Length: 321
Ligand code: BDR
Ligand code: CA
Image 1: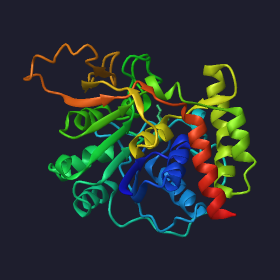
Image 2: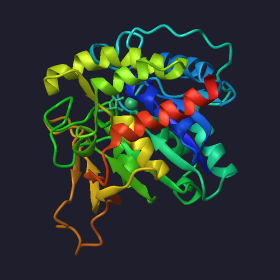
Image 3: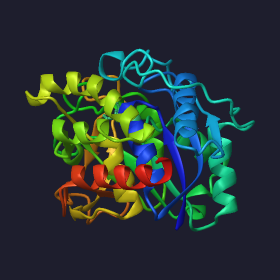
């Protein structure tokens, strides 16, 4: 198994990604940081603690991260997508576990030093904490094994503006720093996550489980489905964050994933928050043009939703029944 640091804004699909990481045999979740995005960092941390408690994993440390993006202030989240409480108005029992005494950025730096060369970073919220960790420890890229980011839109439209995806939109300055850093980075953009759809029959399978975690996820998905019904025209939802988790774990494989130069627009014009990906390799002959070498996942080898449901039901039915 490989050690994982998860950075999240929990969030309904974040909750699914967290449960998936707990269930994935190849992942050893050694720390979690919360960042403002779908909800404030404080509410996201609370949701994370409560989910861990429900999953019998309250020993995994959770650190509070940045409330505000690097520039500006927290915009109030996305209650119309995730609910006021971030988890589709589902109430979970409050975990008695305390928050870690370090910040999320401090936790990431500490874990990178504890697991040199092997720590996998999975970021499924805005990239503020990861950017702060880079500032705290400029050698971070050489300490971690790899970084997987759910975010951006390479060729697909954005979901907040015509070109900007939510995680990048909520802190473009941080995303620009993270994509420019010299590490092994994989971007899991809307291009591939919008095609990874959980259908109503999958949700019914989760709801029918005798185990509390799949059932709670199934309930949360009812809220998520109502938002996504307006996009897909049927009750179902995209699986952004769980897909990034499965790719990071190596349980699903990318079919098409070019390595390109990717930059983030931090201007204040209509393209703010756009992930500008050099899909034609136009800059390939210009090594002096700065920008990270970023693997951008565009399609998958397999259908993702059945794997997600099977992994969750298999693991949680076993540990909880
Ligand atoms: C991303 O934004 C959030 O709403 C989701 O949790 C996901 O991380 C999708 O654009
Ligand atoms: Ca998220």
